[in-house]
Length: 91
Image 1 (cartoon, one colour):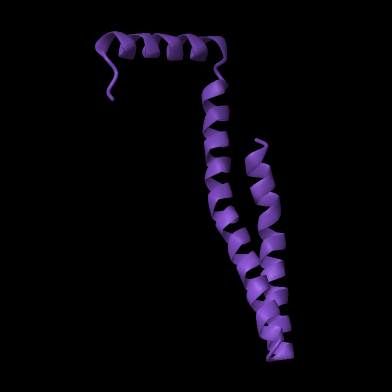
Image 2 (image 1 turned 180 degrees about the vertical axis):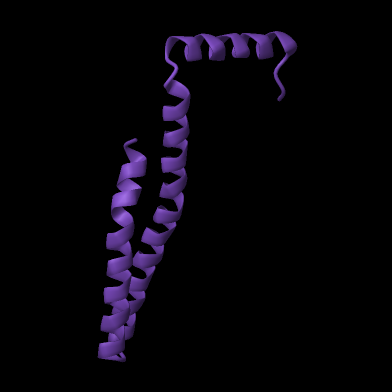
């Protein structure tokens, strides 16, 4: 639902007042948006790593070495993605 003209003007007034009170706010807000943008691909990588880990465990039943390799790769993907996921969550 679009904003009315009055609401749009009030929103612009609030933004200008906020920027006037804290000029660094705009750059900090932009940085946080970028950091959160990184956490989505990292979250996907973490889930993919978990899936690879589970596939590795399942494959280990038939082919021990192949399953171990897939499981280790999955664990390493999860391990690499975890700090980015956590950093994006607490920014």
